[in-house]
Amino acid sequence: MIVIGSGPAGRRAAIQAAKLGKDVLVVERGGRVGGVSVHTGTIPSKTLRETALNLSGWRERGFYGRSYRVKQDINADDLRRRLHLTLSHEVEVLEHQFARNQVSTLRGAAKFTDPHTIEVEGEEGETFTMSADRFLIAVGTIPFRPDYIPFDNGVSVFDSDEILELPDLPRSIAVIGAGVIGVEYATIFSALDVHVTLIEPRDSMLDFIDNELMEDFTYQLRDRGMALRFGKKVESVTRNERGCEVTLEGGRKVRSEMLLFAAGRIGATGSLGLDACGLEVDHRGRLKVDPETLQTSAPHIYAAGDVIGFPSLASTSMEQGRIAACHALGVPAHEPPEFFPYGIYAVPEISTVGMTEEEVNERGIPYESGIARFRETSRGHIMGLDRGMLKMLFSLKTRRLLGCHIVGEGATELIHIGQAVLNLKGTLDYFVENTFNYPTLAEAYKIAALDAWNRMGAGVPVAQVKDG
Image 1 (cartoon, rainbow, N blue to C red):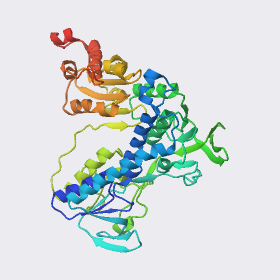
Image 2 (image 1 turned 180 degrees about the vertical axis):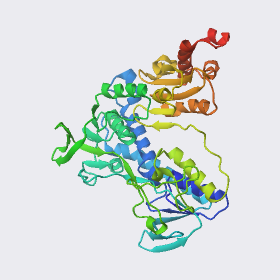
Image 3 (image 1 turned 90 degrees about the horizontal axis):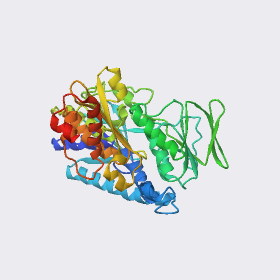
Image 4 (image 1 turned 45 degrees about the vertical axis):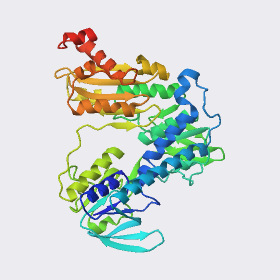
């Protein structure tokens, strides 16, 4: 089996195939293994976030005020130092996993010459030709770079890959695109006390998140001084001696020292020679696959990860890689649970699993919701949290959990409690009866469950009534 790409999908597929006793080769065109996830995407952006929160003293400002900082003058080198240490460690771990499982690797750019053969151009221009019975395409994505954005090789106009190597920390930055990537970087810079203007042609952001959570999140962004310019398209972007100027539909202008364009990514399939094996991609360079087997229209060629589109998460990409490898090698693969969490590493974090309140209403399911504010927990007081909330939705008929949504500190960790109960078809009673460590933010689950119970009432045992 040949795996093209060593990101989350590629690495999991390669190791799975190797554990099944097959000869596996991973072709990676980047300098080191790991793919976008390790070098420009998931790990770098989350490391940058953690560094920003630590150096800025963001988590302690609830006690010491908005002017509090751990390091008074933070520069770009401060942000990169931890980043490079983290990435080196991630690469070493992955290289060790490949070596331990006897997965071969080859650095170079792969291109199909026929349905069963690829040609790889090595780092020094040498060419290798090799064939395999099965292929997995896991090349990930690259930033979408439209012609009207005057990118300047990382001087003042950046894409979401280049921003990691910004030369200086600006006083102001405009971010075009209020998707996951744009929102994450916008809020990270805001935590560093950079003035941020977030620009989005749609009237809202992150539409797949529960509306009540987004109202809380949006309030937090505005409260700390972020400017949100929604509902207007970008007509032009120009550079000048002072930085960048964005002209919006209607004539409004946004001026900033730097600009980050983060409005979408496209599949990195342009150089794969897919026409040689009869495969086509959509307008965003993505491959279409069978959702159950991950097979493309060529049965011996599979695709997984961001290159096949939604949900484009490292966690789900890993599972796709595993399932693809098992199916390609004729081994039964257990299906992942129905519900998986979505994590947005903004400041504050957002994480969600299951149905939103809007989806529950669309399906006509009678329900009740319960909400807990982090400030209602003792741990929240200890941490100085005055923001953050957890929301759960329960069926009135079966009392089962339908969805869990969190915004605030530790949301991406806390969500897994809700995920487990959801996949195990648990009910409101679990949260009311369960004992949580004290003091913890996880207590918010019991608070939210009791909040829902107070409105649901009937059908709850007497013991629970006393406890509630």
